[in-house]
Amino acid sequence: MVKRYPASRSNSVGKVLAIVSQKGGVGKTTTAVNIAASLARRGNKILLIDADPQGSVRFGLGLNAGSTRLGLSDFLSGAEPMQRVVRASNLPWLRVVSAGSVTESARHDDYQRHFAESGRVTELFDRARERGYTVIVDTPPGLGAVVHKVLGASQHVLVPLQCEPLALQTTTQILRGIRSSLASNPGLVLDGIVLTMVETGNPASERVATYVREQLPKGLVLDISVPRTAASVDAFAAGQPVVLRTPDDPAAIAYRSLAEYIAGRLA
Image 1 (cartoon, one colour):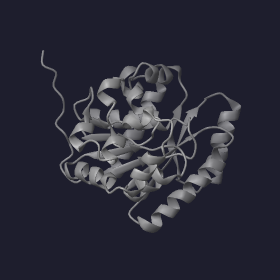
Image 2 (spheres, rainbow, N blue to C red):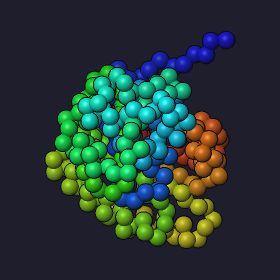
Image 3 (tube, rainbow, N blue to C red):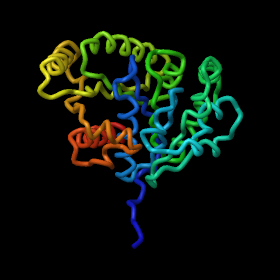
């Protein structure tokens, strides 16, 4: 039997969505991978770009090391053309640019310099957008040169925030960075903060969630939150988005809802 897929819904110029966070380990890559997979399943043309030199996107999608050895860092340095770094995935409408050979380097100075100074970042984004792709960028944690360059070329930004005691402090820092980027990119829109790794029934986790919602401006923290589940951890380890591997899991349901929300914002 021939497997049929929906026709792509992307017929106009696409948008760039940056996924940013002040610290690592908050579910940033998992969020990027699952939003990308969910939107692709809806028939949207998606280009997922791994701008984090740790290169975790390929693990979340189960891409083999050989096919992702060349990626964004190699394109930015001029070593490889664009067509050599954009790869297919297991989903028809999802294309991926891995971090590339920078993941094998002990130092990332050259990568950060190329990213900040090269016009190739914007070229990659623009070429994809012209072809109707929504570009989703998984950025490194913090507010370094890579994040600032991505925010300067994006139309939308989403902030995953782990439900932990340091949440409010790190959020304030990342919001200052986004506000700084608005000075040079007034078209940038903050789509919201999404709480991740929420532990239902855990008083500390629930207390942090309540505190964050009370302290930040109304509407800034999304009603959608992603629970911490064993299935989401297992899915990443197995190289599959949880929305595909265990679609009935609460985390998968939350990510699909988040993708639906993002789709509406990008329209």
